[in-house]
Amino acid sequence: MDFNSHMDTVVTVAVALVNVATPGRARGRDYRPPTGAELTDAVTTALRGTTRDGRRHTPLDAAATRRLAAEAPRLRAVFAAVAGGAADEAA
Image (cartoon, rainbow, N blue to C red; front, side, top):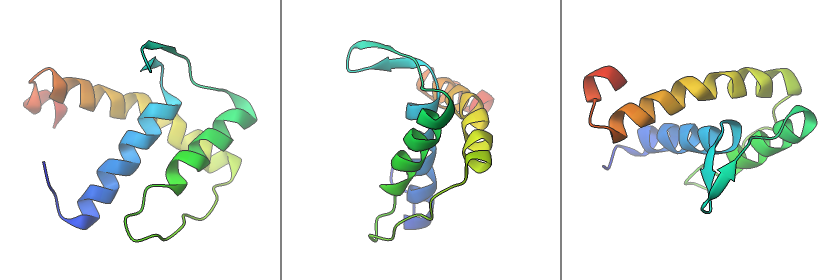
């Protein structure tokens, strides 16, 4: 689905966050997200590559990274609902 460029960036950032900060599958294997400083680095790295216009995100402090990572399971639930055809539940 194509959104406008602003919404594309929001969705891309959400996907990057969910992929690094929640357990799941990656490259055909079980994936466990890192913790501590490694989580901070992984979230910062994932978010750096998400703009379409080449801008770089400001590095996040550890507290901001922890807050974002804590929201990732809620975002994963939205993606899972959409994938399962439950758009109303996702909304």
